[in-house]
Length: 518
Image 1 (cartoon, one colour):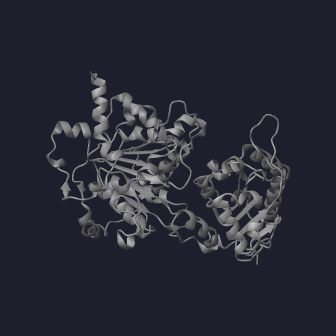
Image 2 (cartoon, one colour):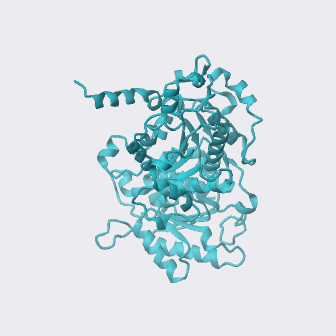
Image 3 (cartoon, one colour):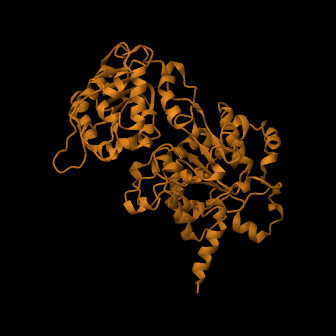
């Protein structure tokens, strides 16, 4: 026989099934108007939902959207895709299904999210907004961007931190918003609350449950494991609440170290899982010019404001159905086209083949490659010392998948007074951008392995590859052993792209690629 607690848990699960397992029939049907003006005072007090929100059926969206085109945007520079996403979020057109803002690298996902939050806050005065992200850095960034808009009045937004967070790690601009967050009871009454997904669980201690918040925005949702994402989701009304998940399922997912957890699928984010369901899947033959996704539940941003066209072409082809459009500032992305070390002028890519030796040190399981480390140092010196196209040390990023290689490169850069160049793993670079990116792949053993993943290690991850090559604006340099990298599909594609465009230099190529040389 079920206990009272078990019955409540079952009811909560049943309540959120339409959100966790959305189906395509949720798109159709008659127009359903939210009758919140007729809700009893008791229900209104318990859910704190906004009045006047309307849920639209699929067949009426086009006519309703045209009426919303005259809305004023706080950021006038938004493109039409971004504006469309903001309109749909503000109008709550897909409720109760989660709305996904699919933001490939450099397409302005965070900018769109900020606009949507401001629109909801101003257009729906009774809204209560919870904004979450899986990490403190991503959460702080949202808080900072909202502050910079100068739209919110004092006392509107609060940043709630975990009690264990060191105050020294908090940006001075954000600290005033954190002071009210120390009193959880007081913080719960703010109109806009910013917290990490896990810290949002503190509100359960106050007895707050489903319906307290009208809107939930989860940024970098692709990096949050699903149980983590469900913590704030449980505070939203399952019928009238609006859930917005922003991220990119083609970039790095949740960090899960347990093999058992991975076996049970906890390395797949809620964002990625939803996008694999029929209601969110790409359909080549549907929705006309809008592309492949149902615009009621997914908006894919395609205008890239970061990278040069030659650097964007490959990731666009491999991961984004060749839909990414080059919209970056030409003055920035073309600034290194004349660099004298480019094998082909006007093509800011170098694939430098190096047959180095991968090594261990002591009992450390991490790999390093001295030959590649020295080559990386050489390129850093060339970029920072060359007077004709000098690059600031803060505009250069060095990405390598192994901690020991990070350590070795940092030591080399310290010896030549270039310590301000950031060196780190792929995970440390997600969400960031630099004028020039140098990648050291490290692995160089071309022995016989039954499983290619054992030979390549971290390099066998397509998501890591995608993040690494999309951080750059104006120049990408890849240092690695082509005889090893050709066995991985993404690096193999990069090798072929480099060879056919005449930007491969270095050691001899493997036989299967020699025919591509001009």
